[in-house]
Length: 219
Image (cartoon, rainbow, N blue to C red; front, top):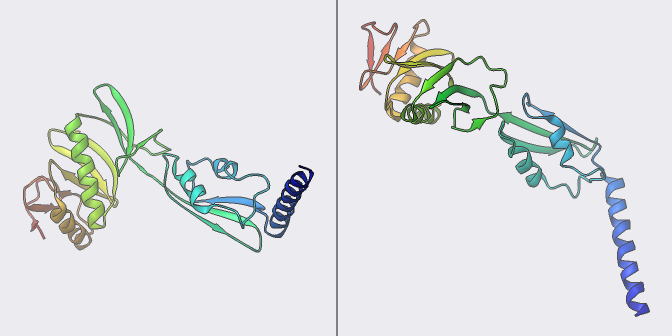
């Protein structure tokens, strides 16, 4: 029994020595969060123990914990072995829709993630039905796959859904489709002075004011 106790004590002491050497050799001296506006920077630091080492730091676990915050779309962890600083590069979601559906108010990002608030964004609240929410999310998906991004949903009414895409006004209704979204990507740079791009007419992207005649066929 005495030999077993001595062996156990030796194992514990060895482990403590290894941990101490590891910490003294490559300690985490600080945590820096970059790219965060709404994500609380202290959350990243709170997930790392006081005596953490760069050698034992689990980057994937830290990234998952950071991304569990609804504001965070992606996170990447990098270590500086000279300074001991751990840098967490954060890409945050952007609110694009401030909506009210059946008396329930919510804020949503372009990929359909519900956010805790506007995050300082100036978005007018729009009243929608559930079908319109689906149309907006499908529109945002088609834009994303074509290389464009939805900035905001500005107005919804009988005249369609008014949005801002890459800083330009775009009106649509119902299904836009990936092909017209791709056509829009090519047409927008060709008309830098156009006030609006109208996608309400099937198979067309109408350039100019909503009733302007000039148009381009779908690509």
